[in-house]
Structures are given as C-alpha cells and as structure tokens.
Image 1 (cartoon, rainbow, N blue to C red):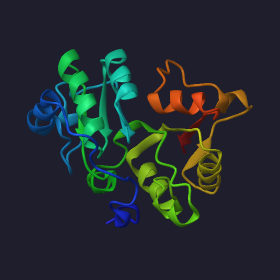
Image 2 (cartoon, one colour):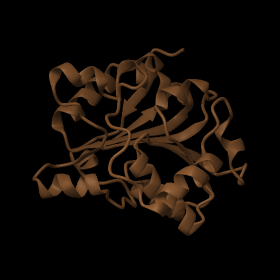
Image 3 (cartoon, one colour):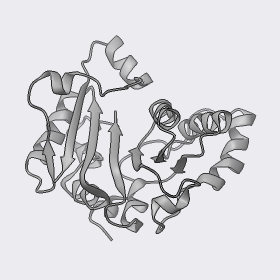
Length: 227
C-alpha cells in the first residue's frame, strides 16, 4: 500500500448534500455501476476506444463541468474522473447520459483506493482543480497534495506527462509549489507570472472559480511536467 493510500478518507468532507432528484438518483443506481472505473485494470482497456490518443485523470471534479467539457471537446481522449461527493457525481452522470460521452469512466470513492491499483505510466495528464484547501493549520494534513501523493502521481504519469493544479487559495498554491520544487519527479514549467495567472488553453471555467472571482480571490494555474 502506498503512503498516500494510508490516509484514505482524509482528503474530502461530506459525501452527500441535499436529496437527489429522481432522475439523478436513477443515474447513480444504474449508470454509475456501468461506467465505474475498475481497480487493478489498465485504464485504456476500460473504454470502447481501446487505442486512445491519450488518457487523462481528473481528481475531485466537483460538478463535472470541466471534465464534461474536456470529454466532449476531445472525443479521441479517454478520461477517468474521481469524485466522492454524490451530488457532484450525479451532475456529471447527467451530462454523460445526455451527451453519450462514452470516453468517461468514474470513481466515486477516495482516489487513494484507486491509484495504487493502477499500472505505472498509465496517464498522460492529471488535473487537480480547486480541491478543498483545508485552511486551518490542524487540517492541512488532509490536503490532497502531499509529498507522498506526488510520488504516487509520478508513478501513474508517463514521462513528459502534465500535472495541472488550480486554486484560488494563495496558501495552498504555496504549499503545492514547495512540494513540487523539492520533488525529484516534477518540474514546474512557469517562466513568468502570466504562466500561472493565465487559465489553461481551452479552459471552460468552473463554478468554484466563478465564486472565487466574485469574492475577490485570484486563481492560479500551475503546470508541472513529469521528469
């Protein structure tokens, strides 16, 4: 078991919000089992397109806006999205069902239960977008990005693959950068300030980002390359 997986359950808060509408509840019970990622199985073999151009992972997709946008924009790429919050999962499933996005598989539990079971170098890109910052000092051990998690992400990323991290919390940005800069596995690509102030190409935005901007917080967009 990886060091990251020993912290199972630590990275997210509540599992369910308000009661689901009947259609969303039906999707959770019927569509979710059909497209749930299979632990221990190579990602590429879990999709109709078994020879994708690339395979991308998004950890903590919230309401699924970004993941659905990427999947509909890049139909030749396979995606695995992880999100333990039931209401957020239901929103993504609605998009998958309505748009027939057969290039998405999902994981509805702690990502540290899935990652250690996957083969080395199975992803070309990993997204971590607006994760829970756990701002109190006593909570920081619950932050998703840690030295141990970076080792695990480096294992499942191909050499040259990208880790993309976005947040509107300055303290969390600094936390991530300090761990990236001491990592033997990643290189931060930024050369100038605009490189982390400018959203990623084709960025659709998320509701978390919109809320941050409304409240006067400035998002940062980090890109790290697997060495």
